[in-house]
Length: 208
Length: 247
Image 1 (cartoon, rainbow over the protein chains, first blue to last red):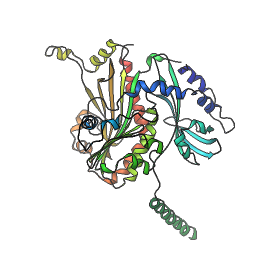
Image 2 (cartoon, chains in turn red, green):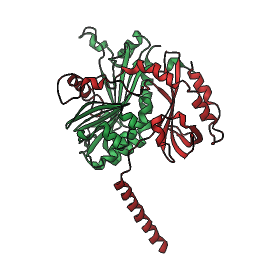
Image 3 (cartoon, chains in turn purple, yellow):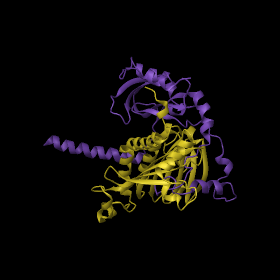
Image 4 (cartoon, one colour):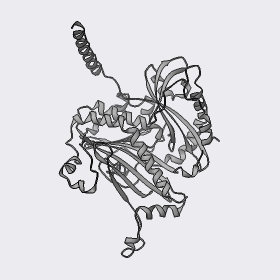
């Protein structure tokens, strides 16, 4: 089983790389071959953990209403306003990755999508470290996120571990593509018009 | 160098974004999130609705929990690997609902931390709520809840609230909730001493503004610019509590 020492060892001295020499990232990604196993081992332990289980404090405090308890209590009754409790007990189709301790957060941008991999720029989040560029295999991305691998798409690379006992940990690496919402035709039209207006301003400046 | 002993043993870690304003709960559903490309089709198939009525919408979809009333929107996840996406969805929703009046925002983290042993668990309670003062009046006094509030370090109106309780789910565990609360307006300066809390300008500055759609850009800025710092502060607080325990 891998330990934190493996994570630190995998880090190595290489902090920048190009598409033909992405040692740092390759090492990092290779350190997490057991991800599928990690999820299933860990999922059961954390499945029962609730998001808001203690008592309330203030208005933007997540515990400031009892909605969760209300829903559970009424949902299991006959009130037609609430969905059945059975519906809420359906097992998730995707196993959650809970209990992950994240040691590194990177914000990525796809520079060029290729066949089977993509070239990306990675910027460390919350640290003033240099931006790095490297290739990432499409296999490292969840299947339902793969359609998002297009030029300029934003994603997050999260590196960390899930503790099993006080002395053993399973390394975990996740790539999550950002979904910030759809560009609606009206928004695109508004931006196009703003761009045109700005362009006209520049033209006026040029003529002067 | 590895130092496993000094790392808090976190049994559960969750993040919530709470926005106070005037919402229309009926529009919130997994289908609406999918239609706006906030979640994938695969994720939308893992929807677990609990209540969707005009006054209230509660559902879970994949890793996300959503609770919306006419006055409050809560988005939450217990998966640390999804915290950035939680922020993206919160920002995306506010951007879509750009005409929704809002007044305050909370970036929150909650932790259940397993203390090394019973003695350490009591030590935390005794440290943050000393019992000497109670022992002459009460029998076996114990700490149930301590909340400390802090002035913000930036110029946003608001406060940082830290709540410490015995964990309801982890034996010999403590529950820590960090509420990074923003009233969506700026103040000229934050109070620097207890006396200043009575100043009229400080009292006024600490009040939330009237709900307004004009506050949405500020909420988006906070989610973008303060997110990482807020999480760093929360994790530092967990470490601080953990370091106080006897290992």
